[in-house]
Length: 462
Image 1: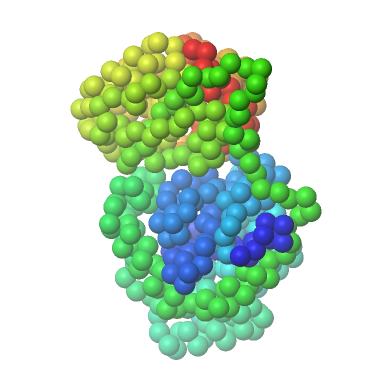
Image 2: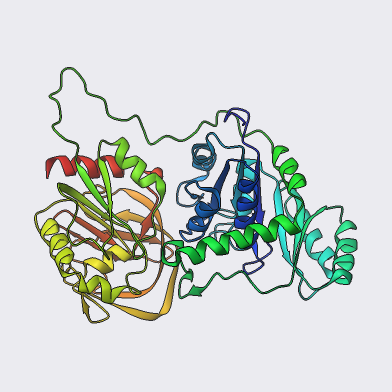
């Protein structure tokens, strides 16, 4: 094991473009290394919630995101060290193509930027299915584009035959980059997709376990694991002064203060319908003094006893609308809590659940708004400012977020909107009513820890 001060051995798995196979390779590599007895720390570049679920299955550890747009470049290293504490090696799956980042923001939030911030070598996964010698030009271009990005090797994916492999290896050798793995063209590992990407782990049960095991076997058979570990150990030292991020000290009783009878109890929605959340959010709530309890809106008919605050993150309520609607006792319990003025934070899926209806099916009715599926995908980073004082943020608080949905809520904003979008377009969005803050915007609270502290304090006093 390596201490955080000397740097955790680490690799970034990237690709020239989406669809090249980096999720299969990254998840498979995590599983293969864990199968050899290594403690593997899993990470994902960008705001994606689904891939980290597969990473967690592969490693037995929480999958964590590294997003330089949502959290700022200065937090990438500390958040990485927080997740990798006590691990033997870390594997970071990239996003989109290696050099693709936030639109119009240069390298910001790209896999390349994160690799540079972590001083980590990059393994480029290349879909070789329709090329042979041309792969040399492709690899050469990616190697030479940014000298600060160290591409330490290539994994050739979808290789058709022994002869095809020989031609590809000769081409890549001419560039001076080692081939660290060759994966043959075969029936893809079963990872079904739908309107927002892969189907989350929580919905697939044993099928997801089998898929991750198959990825691990595929990578173990086709890749040089020893060479990949050596490359990971060659990562450069993290920038001076990097220390693990912390959610803050756990609350302790001060002698001059009265003993708190019981901590505020914050219920957090989970289960198959609400799978989108960042691990740091619950860590921040706990550090602020809350008792965090998870419940499943598909199964539980009441909120946990003693709930004083509610967090409903993202997910797929549109897929489970009938089941969510059928759980009338819980819908009433949520509405009663919200109407009492208790703090409620709802993001995206949570927003839909609080609406009057979703695709014509009754929801909680906390908000006088209706939601429906749409053909249009709304996707992208947002620069936002809080318009109204709420349980999460004071008016004027600036945060960066991400939207990712194929639904529409009408109206899109209440009398007291949650956010004013500064970029890429100016508009108001979301609802602040009583203790409720509901919005499409996904935010990462590590960028603004005061959000969690404010929410827990409101739970104490509401």
